[in-house]
Image (tube, rainbow, N blue to C red; front, top):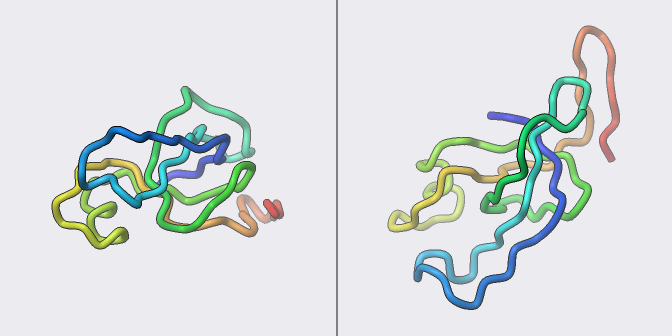
Length: 96
């Protein structure tokens, strides 16, 4: 799992049947200081996250199938939680 920030939503009227009624969000990966690290990418959202939320992202396709309840879907990134705080090296950062 990795930490990311939700920076936007994706709206698509034409898509694979398995994507119907599934929320897609744009995320950017974060480092351990919550600073942007790498390119933005699209993920399924199983946690109801919104723009600006710091989230936990599972980077495996089977997680999307399990969390979104659809064995036929194809997806490799799934937002599976909204993070309230992170503690690293005895330093706690509130994210909300």
